[in-house]
Amino acid sequence: MSNKLYKVFEDVEQNAQLLSKYWHNFSTEISEHLPDTYHAELEELSNKLERAIDNLVDELQNPTLTLATTGTTSSGKSTLVNLLCGAEIVPVAVSEMSAGAVTIEYSEKKSLIIHETPGALWECGEWTGITDE
Image 1 (tube, rainbow, N blue to C red):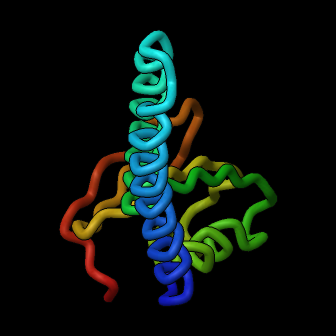
Image 2 (cartoon, rainbow, N blue to C red):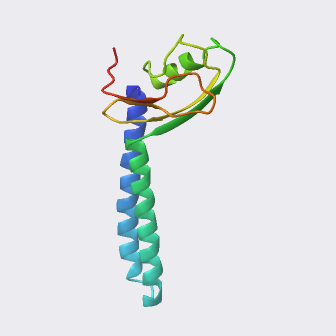
Image 3 (cartoon, helix red, strand yellow):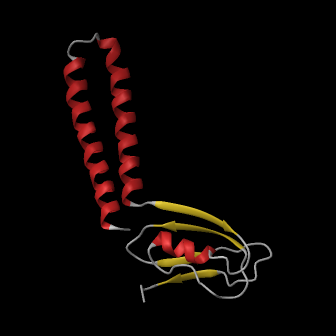
């Protein structure tokens, strides 16, 4: 991913954590002025917000992109996927492949998994230890 995109993700993560901090301060302060009957509901809201923020941060740190392509042979499907990924992940200019689905999950360890597809003519399997070269 480009540095600009990393910066956007970083900013969103920081703002989400600030929101969590501000909500905690607000809920602590407001709970002092609410009847006890509201405390359980306020705690439940706090827990839901915390889980949502944790999920958001996890998604930002481990983004997943699912692409589905279709088109005639040599129309640029694999080239487009590779361009969007910023690396040559999907094979280009190999045997006929007119459609496919690719799920890309960010990880420090690079790997490629091509799932079995009914009627597919291409090789399926899992490859690990992939380098940019």
